[in-house]
Image 1 (cartoon, rainbow, N blue to C red):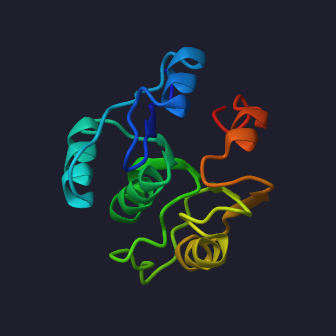
Image 2 (cartoon, rainbow, N blue to C red):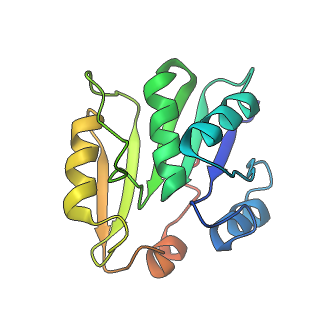
Length: 157
């Protein structure tokens, strides 16, 4: 049985953005829903979408990375792996949890990211996850180069 994998887009994006299209075209089993509204609205929608699913792989881009992180904090038993692309862990309403999350987490962030600056996001990630695998790259918030350079078969295996 295939591991349920979801792509969670950013705040001003959709499942039809560059990353969403890449995943749905290259990995047809990936679920790429659209989200609108506040963080709470989006998390409620994600909870509904994930009802009955376990061992999830959540791929979150920017605000979607924040959503994936919040879902994993609330439901760690249901998440197998997180892949966070320039996650918005610098969002004002986000606070790291009291106990570190032990879910394997890959975080990719651009050194020139001004939306989710590495100097804010990386410390938040280290305060949130037990052993995050953090990759910084010569890129900006959209990760135009790093995203397509990654061999996605490995983190999605």
